[in-house]
Length: 401
Ligand code: ACO
Image (tube, rainbow, N blue to C red; front, top):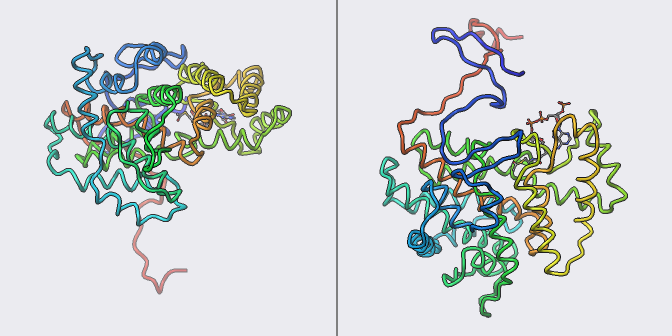
């Protein structure tokens, strides 16, 4: 209902579609969403089946190559990722330029973009092998950079990756390990971490992926494009919502305060929104949120944690789902609603939540970037409806009012 047709001098007509509610900017084979039915498929496979039976790196392979790997292909891919987990030693000096109290997403925008200064052997975006090595480097180095970011902000030494560990174990080892002690990662937490990464791996043309595509359409360096995607993800309307959800749950504090919070969200004079609720595409349950809720129950149960925030979240969900305001507007919990509770149980600080999202989303970003460059594509160049003054003559400074 927001589409209007605007006249364009010289070049025919274009659609006016603020927020790109109804504009497809590309074709893609990677991910399918049916927002009304609450369906999410990667390469045709339902997200629920991937979360239960696959793992993050296998899903990365699926996004990049369009099929599930056989066992040899999987082993080769996992080994390639393992070979690239280290970052250039110069990166550690790069970190030192940041304040220790910088937001981790600010550091991530910088350090991931800085990777573009290191890999001059793979700059031909038309070459499939060059695109592939950039994708593998990114997927391999994101956990290392994310963990370095965290260690830097808390003043602890950086940890080297341990390549005998799985992808998610290695991430937790670099986050919480101590250089003086052997790695000691809880396998239940590593599995939960892996599922969180997998649930975030791709979501077609969301704001950050569209940003990566738009930046990439100019032929820009892939690491710089991913840095642009990280910047777009940071906002609270997108990936930053996971941090905002936990802050909101903590502010609510107790189940008895939930009604007041829902009332605020419904008040048109109050800008407050229920964080973790609503989605541009899903007008039904976000299937990732359902899996996330299950994982939250499993992780907290396994660790014997009785987090009052989980009770607050469940109560909030129950009330909102029964409230006519949320029912009419089709506002359901999204992927960010339960992820924070799991991340908190794992020991990840709130300020790192969106970094976790960025790490998980990296294969999606780079798969879309690569898919775009695999076929003839044009530079992305949206139009606008001009609403400024008509042409007028310049007024000299001394003649202005
Ligand atoms: N709480 C209360 N009301 C809401 C909420 C919410 N979380 N979300 C939407 N609404 C209301 C709006 O006020 C609007 O009401 P109106 O029609 O009376 O003006 C209506 O629902 C439609 O909302 P829009 O903002 O127009 O929907 P849009 O598709 O542009 O935005 C968004 C989607 C940004 C996700 C929105 O629902 C929101 O702000 N949610 C909270 C933040 C959040 O959880 N973001 C994470 C999204 S998922 C992701 O990025 C992984």
